[in-house]
Amino acid sequence: MVSPKEVINELLVDVFNHILSIESDVLKQRGVKISMTEVHVLEAIKNSQIPTMGSVAQRLRVTLGTLTTSINVLVRKNYVFRYRDEADRRKVYLKLTDSALEVLKVHDEFHNEMVSSLFKDLELEKDEVLMKSLENISRYFKEHY
Image 1 (tube, helix red, strand yellow):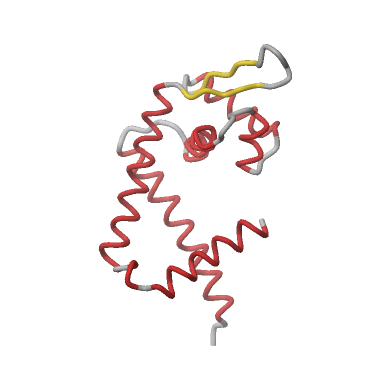
Image 2 (cartoon, helix red, strand yellow):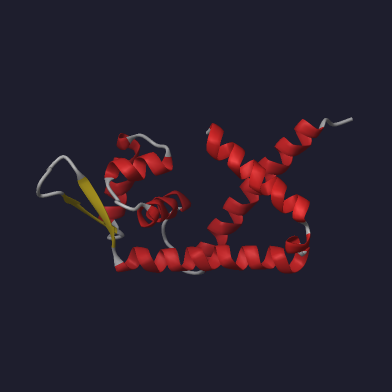
């Protein structure tokens, strides 16, 4: 007999991998020519109140060096503009280009469609226990990782 722990692990990993795979395929079909990692870097820049290299690296939970590698590629592909603070030259700010905003629009549309489909097909809004469980799982990961 399979333990609940093993079932939950398999379900979480399976759902996570399916979402990433489907998301990548759908975005490619819709003309997005960058990797999912690059899309998520753009999203982190967009969602940062003050988009500095440090704040975006922290949001993504990566080192500054790792982010620098990704940003160099995104600058070269004309998705990100990088500039320094005139008062404190150590601070490097990031700004999304119009191309990046278009990619994020497609990305957001995918997420909206995915969630709407889940609600329509599974009637999730009617299942309060499931909703509360998902909130608890989300809170757990935010607090512990």
